[in-house]
Length: 429
Image (cartoon, rainbow, N blue to C red):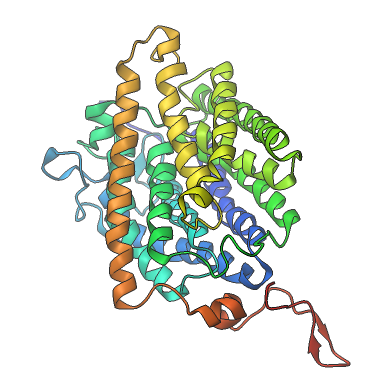
């Protein structure tokens, strides 16, 4: 039997990819932080960093085992929690997964788990207790993300002998997390938005982003980090990683153009917020498909996602739910577009490329299963948290500003020392 050895090229690429994915956490914090009002900036950023902290600890303790352990009973629903508890021998320099050190693969996948939870926070901006959010984040990662990631990412005979049902039994394609990350987070965001209810003044007073430069910077960092997210999911320095990188650029640029075109036709203006949102929409949509389509397919996916996500932003006003930062419109809709479009434009498997309808049906089943499970489970978890410790701050705290009320801090101390007064913080800021 040939001895498995570490490939230094693959390892170097995966070390870089892991760093890029870690960068997505502060990128998301800046993106979300710039989109909220000035009195909510720090809380919004804290929710991203808090998610990273709680989820990665749980990942080491038992999350990796739940995702990449052998499927319990061979059903493909959940990994054996006891197989790699506290990594159980994988946290040493000799352990190898594929062609890279096990520690690198574990770290890379752990950040996937953390950012998925962090994405949800945008749906409940301005009004969630930080402590309740942290409790929710830990429970949701355990009961929703870890099982779903097992379904999608645990391939037979990679880490586990028997893995998840979507990856192995259904055969739906999801290269980097359109289902496990984006549909999962988007459905959860919708459920939490319904549980917490609308912000004070939603639909009546302007709730504009306080810093569009921060939004643009955050989008740029997310795009940069996403190269690790998508191309790193090849778990090797090879042609698949190169194709994923190319398609990540192509789909994202197409999504920016289509989002801006929708804005121009609908509103008469193409905005910087629209450009930044188009970036994220394109990144989301190409995530599941980046290794399954060619460059023209990536452009099609990006263009469709940019337009549909832009049009979906208005749904919250029509349907009456308050998804503060459009997690549903961007991540749920974008994730569905990218996942389903594989069935149309996937190389060899897509309907438009002679593949018939078989793969399209598989993609729809995978997307629907994750959406339904995440939405229902999140409703239950969120409601329990709300009924036990309370999930939402008071109206007075929300009006005063969640940063001061919960964290006793302000994002910007605009103080005239000679007068001792704080400037720039009006009641509606």
